[in-house]
Structures are given as structure tokens and as C-alpha cells.
Image (cartoon, rainbow, N blue to C red; front, side):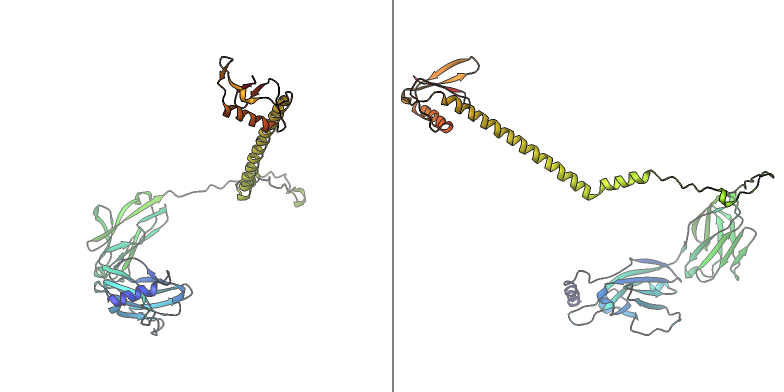
Amino acid sequence: MHLSFILALLSCLPVSLCIVTTVGDLAVLGGRSVTIPCHYEPQYAGYVKYWCRGRMREICTSLARTDTPQSSGSEEQVAIFDDPVQLVFTVTMRELKEEDSGWYWCGVEVGGIWSADVAASLHVDVVHGMSVVNSRLSGEEGTSVTVECQYSEKYRDSEKKWCRSGDWSSCLVTDAESGIYEDTSVVISDDKKGSFSVTLKNLEKRDSGWYWCAAAQQQMSVHVMVTPRVTTTPVSVKTSPTSQPQSASQYTYVPPPKPIAKDWDYQRHFMESPLMVCAVIVILVALVMLSYKLWHHYRKTQRQRRAMENKARLSEHPGDGDWQNASVVFLNSGSHQYTPSPPNKESVGWIIDRLRIFSPTYTSQNNLVLVDQINNCVCVHV
């Protein structure tokens, strides 16, 4: 068992679609039939399909195979049919009995020592009881409705009933031999094979309510709703005896007005198109980049203009003096007074370097007052 399980896993590892699928667990009334679909993948279209019974696939008992010929038109208890075009094979089990309950497998015979069969399991439970095809019915007054009640094999010979819910004295019972009951408003017919039908004729408003269809002590609820009949009143058109019929040439064709909603729908679809959204995003990005470039150009122009003004101011005082005896004072913008600082070689050298940056040919010989607008300082030559 463990070896076969490992082989099945190994055979399914190379492809993710190595599977067979089917329905879930089923509950079927005794004596009824059931058809089960088993779906498989395209690579298994040419393989043999089978249906077997047992809790374990490796030791299950085969009930039907697609490579076994089946007589056409015969009512076999188990029949199998493969449709490679739809990639599904179906299994039909007829006249189920209680002992048919158990585990079943629909599988594909792959064969080979390294390739285990692929299969899917389900549990079929054959039960005794009743069911209805449609538990809610509606019809107009004066018409008819039919409900189909199904029962298991155990209740095949039991009398069938149709009753008002909660009132057993209102039950209508079929004949034990013919399985028929009929009156002016109700017809009950039992086919003795697993279902009986109840037809309510000439419906009236009072027929609305809950009912039971019953077999022995088993019953299923059914609700019937009767709606008013829809009536139509003919409209008579009076014509004047003196009026003459008009010929076809006297009629003028007027084309129907064009709906305004179409233009709006077109515009709405146009605005919702991905191409339009992308175009709007590109335009926004281009506007942002253009604004940034204009701002950057403005800042650069301002810096160049300030540099040229400083250069022109410095060029008015040519000469080269003794900057070792210079002192530096800083402008106190709050009090508008100048606070001198002691001579410092590094401070003076820094100012000379700044001057040379603005005017590399600058020389100083006379007394000079220098204003550094960048650092808010004043250099005074002593």
C-alpha cells in the first residue's frame, strides 16, 4: 500500500494537472438511479477508464470498464460511457439498494511500474425516505400545477397520500392496486417505480398553502401559491364613417430621435480608456518638469546677476594693500551696529580668497570697505 501511494505521488510530481475529479458524497433514495461524472485531463483521453468499489483503490472491485463491450440499449445495473471530447466519463447505477452503500472510485488506468493509476473517490449512501423535485409551486387561478414526489424502494407498495399540512383528515389516498386517485380538483398517479405525481386542477385562491406528499409515515412539505389571473380588456376604436383610408404615399416617415445617452457613453468610455489615462499622466509629469526647469533657471540667473554686481562693486577699488593688518567686523542686523573682531589670519585669508573668486585680477592698495552679502560680514582695511 505504501509503495503504491509513493508511486502515485511520483507520477504526479512532473505535472500539476495529474488528477481526476468527481462530485462529492451522495445520498440516493433506495430504488432510484444515479449518474456520476468523472472529469480527467487531456493527457488521459486515450486511456482506459474504470469504476470500482472499495475503500482502497489498490484492492477495489471493478464494476465497469470502458474497454469492456456493453450491449446497446440494455438496462445494466452499472454502465460506463467515455466522452473524450468533453474529457469526462459517466457512470450510471440503477435501482440502488441499501447494500449498495459504500466507497466507489472513478479512475484512469495508466499502467507501468513507475506510473500509478489516477483516481478519485466518493461515498454513496442509499437511504430510505422521500424527496420532492420542487417544494414551491405557483400558478394562476383556473390553471393547474403538478408536483413530483419521490420515494425509496421500501415504500414502493405503500399507499401514497396528499394532505393539507397539519390536517391528516384532509388526506387523499391512492388506490392500493392501481395507484390512482382522481376527483374534480386533484389527480394522484403512482408509477410504482419510485415516484408519484400530484396535479392540482382549476386552482382557486383558497388552494394556497402548505401540503404534504406522504408514503407510509414519510412525508415532505410542499408550498402552493395561487396568484390572481391576469385579464386584458380589449380597447375598441371608433372610426368615423366619413373618414377615408389614407394611402401609403400620404404617410411621412419620421426617423426616431437619436438618444443623447450614446454621446455621453462614448465620452465616458473615452475618458476611461487606459490610453487617455496614460496621456494625462504624461502631460502632468511634463508640466512638473517644465516648472522645475523654469524655477532652476530663475535661481541660476539671480545668482549670476548677484555675482556680476559684486564683481562690479569690487572693481571700483583696485590695488593691493597689506592685508596682514586688516580686521574683520560682522554686521549686527538687529542693532545696525558693527562689532569688530580681533585680527585673524584665517579670517582675512578667507576674505581674500572670496575676492579672488569674484575677481581673480583684483589688487588692493588703499583703504577699502568690503561688504560680503553672502555671509553678512564687513572687512575694513586699516
